[in-house]
Image (cartoon, rainbow over all chains, first blue to last red; front, side, top):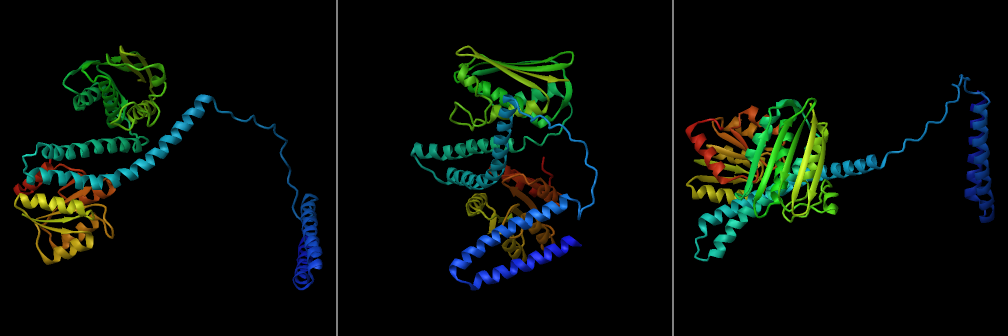
Length: 298
Length: 122
């Protein structure tokens, strides 16, 4: 009750001071402004002190003072992972929107290229070639958009009991590589929980990456081995290999040494391995080849 | 066949209509769902290609309205990005197929053939 009277009295005094301030001379305005500020400080302090003396608030027993918890400091690896996760999340959102916006004009271009191929009869081979190129460039652009879209879907994972050997085999069948590249599978029978679409995508990305290192043809060995409590997948190529600097960046989003991709293939593969509880390691030697080994728990 | 193409992308309407006319079909185009519904009130169509995402009403809602006017018309949905809920709804409403942009015209020809033969898509 006392605090209510205090508040009302303070409010009236404050209002009187404001009215005088508005209608008084300049020097008096300054003096009164200072008085208002001082009044405000005193008012706040008295209300706060009153509450601490328990005049208006019932006293409740306070718990015994707890020791201050130690601040949690992330490790450098956790920090780096967090940065990469944020990068990936931002890219995912952007990619989803851009995929839709870009595919509309691409669809028009593809159809226009088709129409030209049927109606533009010319002896100029360059024109005929350019018309074919239009359609191919649309397909290439669409592939990059699909790569972007795959990133935006990475967080949606649904694991079911799967025949891993069949997933790897079907992924290898769906990969398109140059005729000069030979893919040699050595697949054990493995059954484990996995998201079938994501798993196939991850295998395709590893094999596609290996193929990109074989511009003049070569060999890609794909091995799936069942162990006691795990299974591992190895993709080995005898291609151009990587130096240590390139190797240290290969899983970063948008890092690429190639001109025709966005550099998301291995980032996507790494994320899929992570959500499946696996680990991935890469060894490479310049001009000798690269080996990617992924170990999954069973 | 008499075909209606509803898509807000002028390039796609123009090119797809041109190609289908080369194949001997009679094609009418609409720039949005409302225009497509108006066209359906004026003429009879065998096949309607509907873009799912259009300004105003989307392709699925357009299809529902056109179904009331032309119950025998067969709808094929087109989408630039998989909007799964709308695709499911369209197929539940009876759409014949759903294709993603950019598509191969051979796919379109195959769908038209299947509709002509009254067969289900693979």
